[in-house]
Length: 312
Image (tube, rainbow, N blue to C red; front, side, top):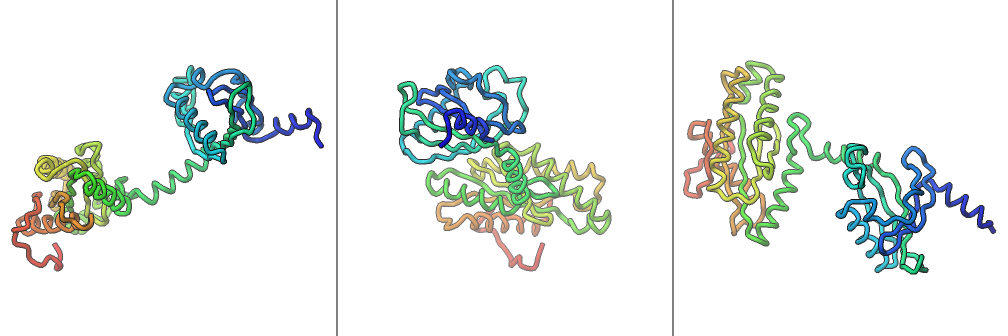
């Protein structure tokens, strides 16, 4: 068996810090944290309360997680970030980016200083979180334009469709592509074509609302999801976008392919899937092409639509 002094030495040598936290948020004891790459000496916290150290929102979050662990009596695992703005007195002196932790929280079978308490082991997972963020960005972001890609857009559309079905919250989808994009590549080269796509993405970021979701579907095709927007409200938004894109493309010195054509439609009550609004927007886009290009049209079920499988 280990002596009391040996047990204390073992606890002190733990790489990750282990906090004994009471229900009221008091730091009753701190052990470990020997990995100096990630942790500083936290002994000055002993005896203090979380609300003395952390701002209200963050201290309330910790308190709620302690309550969950005490109620379940099972191992409770959470991931959380701590930024300088969360810590009292470090608002401007701490690191700019949050540090991420995995917390493993276990209720203790005995009270500490007359209170229920938990063991909270905090492991620094910042590197893992950054890697996961990069991988997620790579899977969701179009590398050329920086807009979300088709995969992410379809996820957002599916979620928006569920909201629409449940709460009848309107949403509109705008689909557009570049008129005569092939001419840009043929006359100016593919680098100029890439620049045109990046220019459109930049205009989308500046002209669309923060709640809108512009995406690159592939090639020169783009789509914008506009939540909380009915068809009539979408019209001035997409028309302004068309004009701004034309101006920006003109500044690139393009003789052809400097405009866009687009179509838009809102979610409808008889839609059986979110793909139906995409189909209608695509039909309206085809109509815009057929009627002369460089325009945006709303979907009209009574519009004469030829078979557009032959291309645009």
